[in-house]
Image 1: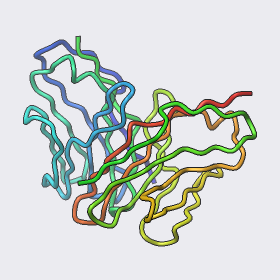
Image 2: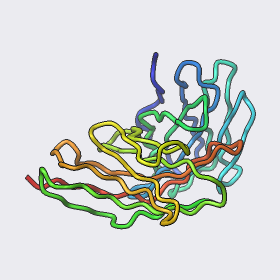
Image 3: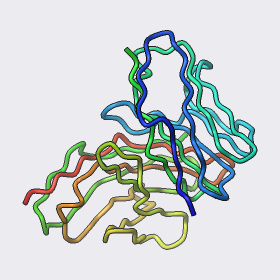
Image 4: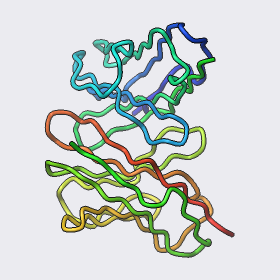
Amino acid sequence: ETGVTQSPTHLIKTRGQQVTLRCSSQSGHNTVSWYQQALGQGPQFIFQYYREEENGRGNFPPRFSGLQFPNYSSELNVNALELDDSALYLCASSRSPDTQYFGPGTRLTVL
Amino acid sequence: AQSVTQLGSHVSVSEGALVLLRCNYSSSVPPYLFWYVQYPNQGLQLLLKYTSAATLVKGINGFEAEFKKSETSFHLTKPSAHMSDAAEYFCAVGSNFGNEKLTFGTGTRLTIIP
């Protein structure tokens, strides 16, 4: 059974640009959640997808958007990047509410 | 609404000593509670979880936590600290009511003194 993978590992962008982060769910998991972890903070829930439909969203603006594909992999898109978007972005997959498995994260730096 | 408070952003213990990391939660529905560990430049690894079964939960690497509803607490303990336990620890609360969103605390950095 493969774990959750994320790409790329690191990314550097400039203000105003757009970025796409990718996540491959653990085998058999139909739910994926995205979290933003700013330096020195706990992860903050961005949104969740269940069977390709958004299933809950945290307090993030609409320029944060996502997709889930039929194979349950997922993308996080962020438009009009701001300096405060610099963070570790974590993807987590699950097939039941009691356990989420996290990937290693993508470190985004916005200059 | 759900929230988590972790008391102590930094905790230092001597190798071999008891580890105690504190977590208090707030939830309007029966909670699921989790402890995750994060090593430098890595993602989150699940240590243990409480999902309304036994109140004393045993996890990996010798850690355990006790759910106390009356105190709204879910403190993490380990009888004897090891150097490899040095990491950031996060307490999180979730629920089984349709959305698996986790709400995390701000984390406790555990340092082990040789």
